[in-house]
Amino acid sequence: MIEIIQQIVNGLAIGGIYVLIALGLTTVFGILGIAHFAHGSVSMFGGYLTFFLVVQQGFPLVAAILVALLVGMLLGVVIELLAYRPVRNANHINAFIVALGLTMMVEGANLHFFGAEQIVIPTDFKRVFNIGGVTIPELRLYVIVSAAALVICMTLFIERTKTGQAIRAVAENRDAAILMGVNVNTIPLVVFAISTMLGVAAGVMVGSLFAIAPGIGEGLVIKGFAVLILGGLGSIPGAIVGGIVLGVAEALAAGFISSAYKDVIAFAVMIIVLLVRPQGLLGKAT
Image (cartoon, rainbow, N blue to C red):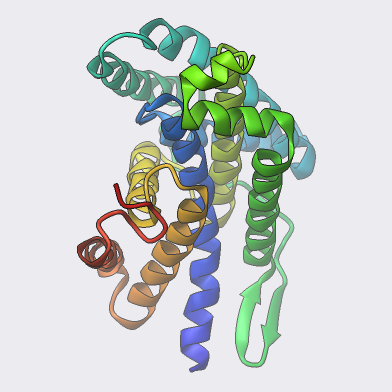
């Protein structure tokens, strides 16, 4: 039982990262209908930038993370303006091709500016807590708490603010939102800024807990889309539940079977859920 709890705790940290990635993806998909494949590479950019600021520029970790989040928000605005806005009213295949091209561009930029070596963001969180036989490294605890705090802030923003209400209105019915006075040209900028900020936060967590290297972003965005399908496309609660389920499933598979099969088990869980509920765990049947 202790080992099961241990793996669940480990899975919560991984699941928190998946939730942040999936929230960014589901927000963009729900508003604009765009599969933002470059989201994983953009997330890795945030991790690389944080590493650069901490190791080469001597920034304190918290300050480096804040700068990376702000740069990520600006990058999201630039991506929406220059990459996706010109094809907003074009055929969906155009946005799909732009997304693939943007992925290669961002990945190439990461390689050019930060190199191809694997890096780990250094932290001072070295303590390990032992609670009833369950060990919780301090860094994992901070990751879980930070991910939960970001999810809560995101939820409150969407549910309680006028901008959040405008985002939900555009997602529900773009034409009706225009008639109600919503500026539909500003909303995508806000959506991409928030989405990229969440992705950067996830990239920092990956770089601190594990490592960042070329190709990591592509794998991360695949997991993000898996979470969307698992939780239900366009559902923010579904992204949260799906990310936790996928993270815990991976941790249990790695702990009790083999780390080599954790991806297989995780996607098997997704397939089983979809066989029972094709619309996903919290998606609405149509």
